[in-house]
Image 1 (cartoon, rainbow, N blue to C red):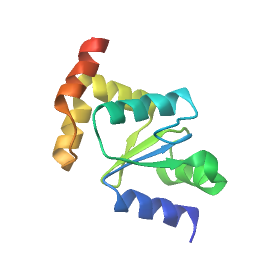
Image 2: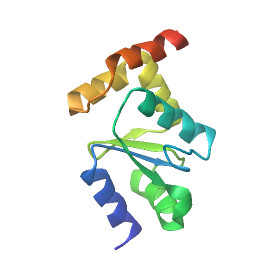
Image 3: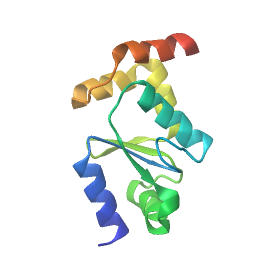
Image 4: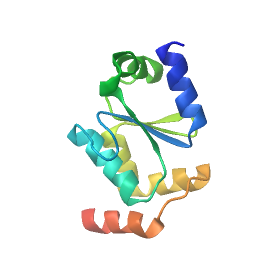
Length: 119
């Protein structure tokens, strides 16, 4: 199975997937930590893929999405973005809408708290 096949299987088998450096419980870079932190705080159930553990996946995900950086968030098989885009979407409320429209459960109060703290 190629890296692209593995990636495709992962993003289609899980509602929300974060390709990141490290894991959701132990991120290995600030950007991955920020996105995982937002998802964890919002109570989103997501699969984490540690790109540092597999060089083929690390390069493969960049080719798959045509996006040069990690982390990368996928919702319902669709590439959403990296750290800056997710942060922007979180603060604007777009991330809530995306999760709601996709049938992904999350804690709306927690999302509001993040926005209040960053307002």
